Length: 528
Image 1 (cartoon, helix red, strand yellow):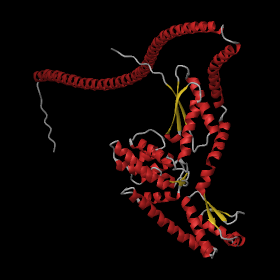
Image 2 (cartoon, helix red, strand yellow):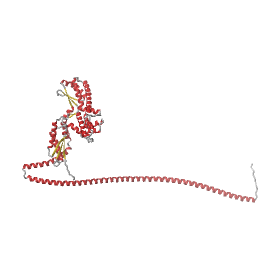
Image 3 (spheres, helix red, strand yellow):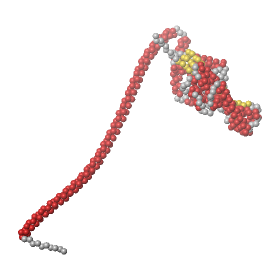
Image 4 (cartoon, rainbow, N blue to C red):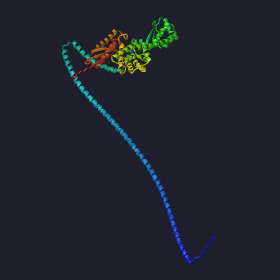
């Protein structure tokens, strides 16, 4: 239900209301304007805030972009800087190397200069010495000229024959020196092309020297009672002799020599086994391949047993204890080895005894010397199986089976091979020479031995300029002392060659003879 109130106002009231309404309208309009202005201001502030924030965001982006660009530019500049720095460093290193190399060259040049200075000083000293020597020679020549003048004065009273003889002596003395110089020059020239000739000479020497020794060391003979037995030894189509050679490892030579079959082998034990086996087969009379194998096997055991017994007996006789069984066996094998007719085991026992005597006289350990002397030729027991000389083989065996270093060195060096580091080595060398070269040791009588020594001394003393000559080392070497004033070095070499040639042409001897020419000048002064 709606109610409407209708009021009626008077003109004064209406005017007042109109004015009031106008005032109210003005107030409302002002209020609305103020509110509008305030709202507009607020919007403007918000717009300014938004613009400010947007500006800040854009400024941040600009700063970030600037920072990124700056960082990228910094990295680029840094890389350029590093590249330039690296190049500069490399150049500095190269320059340092060049400087170091230049310093080394300077040091080398300084060393060279120092060496040249020393050489110059030495040359100056040499020049001074040569000047003194020339002065001495000048004085000597003056003396010679004076003597020649005096001799010429004597020549005036000589006959033609006497003058000719004197002239020939002078020419011979002058030509001897020139001949020695010519020989030395020819020898130096011949060394370049002497290989073929040296081989021929060595082969000839081996043939001349080793025939008797080789025959003695490699061949045994077995007597055959009849030619029928010789045929049985050969067998049908040679099957028995082939079986025998296969079982023993030797060569059996059956020729036209009556009553003899020859057994040949470098191994002395194998040769002895074959000889005994063949003698047993001949005595038994049953000779066929099966019987041959049985007899050879039995003989091998017998010989092996005898080898051990001989080795043990040698150690007992030499009073040597603690030897390895293998060394004892090898000593026993030396019983079947000979050297120039001398039994090697007996020779080893002699060397052991002599070595102990020498060591005791010198105040050394006689037990070590005796042990080294007994083992010094142990390498000969297997030198047909192992390459090398018997001293090196023996030293290797002794080292392998636990012998002391002194003994190993003495065994390996008793023939003068290598540097002498032990006092026992020359003792063994001396004892070996005494045993091997004493009269009768190698089928040489005392009279022949003495004659050989005298002949050596006579041949050496027969040369002009020789003052004294001595045969030493049981005739293995002749020591010749020459006059140092009348014989120089080149003439000494010629004398040595001439003596060696005469010994080869005029004498017979085992092995080789060493000719040593000694030219010595002694100057003695006394300080008081």
